[in-house]
Image 1: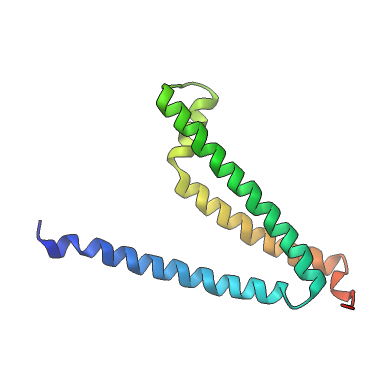
Image 2: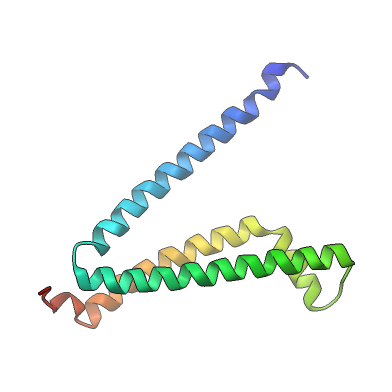
Length: 123
């Protein structure tokens, strides 16, 4: 295989990462712009996003850890099959995590408005 054919893969990776990082930056600019416009909003948003980040980190770490244990010890059947499947499909789990973060932002905006927090003055 010629070297030029092999070098297309780093170029594709760079293009994909540029797209994903730019999309993430634009999204986070909007989210943080909304959250930091008001001190009360910032407090609730930071608590929610920190809690979700801890839960996601624990979930991914648990799936990876149990997947490693199942793979090394040759465990199979029942829950171990589910753990191995989840560990093998972490890309899908990543998409689910992104969707959950987007949904939580949308729910935060709705809850913030429906509960009347937007009417609380910042003192």
